Image: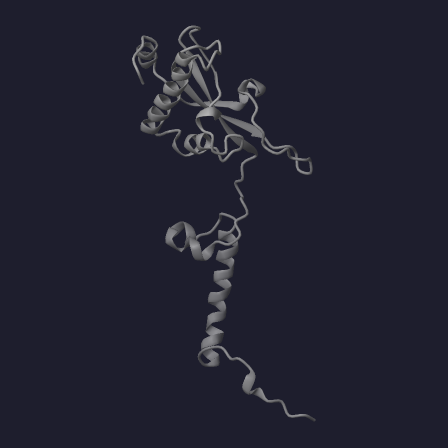
Amino acid sequence: MARVDASGVAEGIGPPWFRRALVPFACLYLIEFGLGSNGWGVVGEALPATRFFVQGACLFPDAQSTAIEYRVQGWSCARNQFEELDYRPDFPMHSDDKESRFFRTASFYRQNRQVMHALEAFLIGRHNERVARGDDTSPSGLLGGIRVLSVRVPFPPPGQPIQRYRYRPLSYFPESYRKTWYHTSTSRQERWCAGQTP
């Protein structure tokens, strides 16, 4: 019978009793890891700094069932109503996909009034400049405000094909899909429609 050379066999650190004592701790860790990966962890909730170590492939247990898009409407001074404003000429980078700078701004800063005021001034200023030059002949005419909305588009049932994103006008979506995040105040609308520069 051939003699086996055991010199190449790896051994754990410490004496056997130490390695055996680690088994219950390893089991507790694996249980916490499994629970933490499903959003039910105990240690991760009590000590948030440990979440990096006790959560694994937490595969979106709270995943959205909708895709979120953003749109903007402009307040038409001539028609006294909000009408869809095509933001794409003013945000040419990735203008026809969801990596548009407008989407990023609306997604991350929709509740930041300072950023929304800057977005408002930018969009109104650019649109009104085009109208003054005669480059924009839309019925809306001069704008006095904006309204930023999100549109929640439901995903198709599992197994059904998902269409690639393409820009569709706001009128394509039912009213129930929309949520308003920001709109220009009436006093600002009146000032800007009276000729004040944003």
